[in-house]
Image 1 (tube, helix red, strand yellow):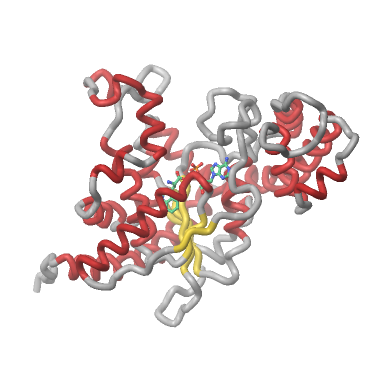
Image 2 (cartoon, helix red, strand yellow):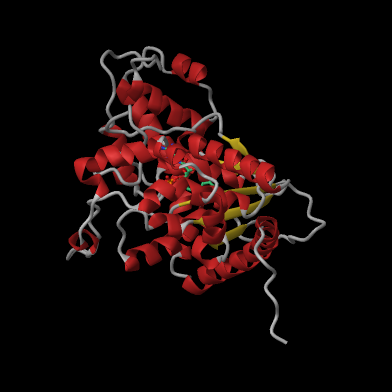
Length: 362
Ligand code: AMP
Ligand code: TRP
């Protein structure tokens, strides 16, 4: 693990992802792969945010297993634990404590205006504000049905702000969909500094140029997502070559036959963007290369390219997931370093807010 003492002047990078199952090609290209390129120049913290995960229905055993799956996939994607700190959010005391303090300087209206929150409310429809005990029971297949909007979904962006500010992070790599949440985090940091005195650095976002938003293969107007019910919509980094082939062959394309990423060509634009992220060629170069060739050629070359790139990741994951003790150790070391940093910032915040010192029993 990198030393994390006062002398460490490398910029602090922090980012987190929910342990909600297998990572998608979107997570890989829009997030994890970019993180792995930042390890040398920065002091990197990667959180697996299980406290966030319970805002939507999840079965306890599945959630626990997902955390190990997640860290094994991270390492397989290149997040070398010797060069960064990977931790589970619930292992570090301070996330919810700081979130509460920030909640008390957050106007409810700002949370209600968050796009992601509004989308979730819209999905749940009219039943969104009330729940019965029935809603909270587990169903026979293990998942808790979500029939209402819980307060956690509303407060989620404040917990995310706490995740970032607890480490005084300089840089936060996120996908396009998280920009608004990051903006709220910056506002809250500024508000706190203004209200109490300079405490937090104002974190900057980092959105990669390519792969920032990989779209669904079934509906290229929507983001590729872990939770899509349509099996063909999402490519997972652990998919076997035959699944990759099936999904890419079935990917929705647009009318016409020209391989050009125009405004009404969402399907082709998405496939070219995936190609570009993996091959490093620009969209212009790819359009020129594929000129006169049909969709079939693009799809078969893309299948090849994805399979080649994901093959080593899949192999490494299969080895790692058998090594539970190793994974637990990585998370224990990560949490220990994260806790040290979090303690410093949290005690500073407590002092600024006016909480009395905790006296030691003598
Ligand atoms: P999530 O899957 O929502 O926990 O997101 C984990 C990270 O992956 C975040 O930085 C997201 O912004 C990023 N991400 C998720 N889906 C995509 C996607 N389809 N394209 C690009 N980045 C994504
Ligand atoms: N909300 C983020 C997502 O759904 C995950 C997240 C939680 C996060 N805390 C964070 C991302 C802190 C960056 C920094 O993708």
